[in-house]
Image 1 (cartoon, rainbow, N blue to C red):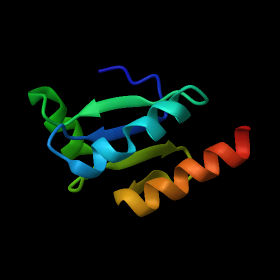
Image 2: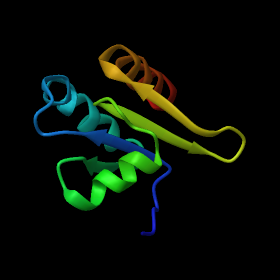
Image 3: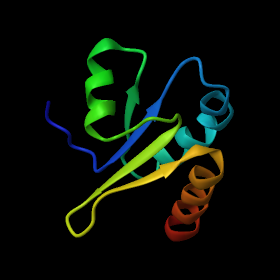
Image 4: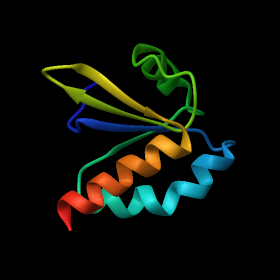
Length: 89
């Protein structure tokens, strides 16, 4: 699988927090490219395992220097969203 984005958003359709922050994620996806990964799809479960995702929602940022940086849960993802908005707006 070729991943063009360096930011992956792991979510589940059954996750209440994922539903609550969807509009925020969609908003910042207009600013920076985000690859949405729905864990409910069979092929994506392997990708979630590969990125050590065990909680939804999770944002994984791929970096050359530090490997994978994960923002997990509503509080951390809200902090990430604020950072993106402050940086790019």
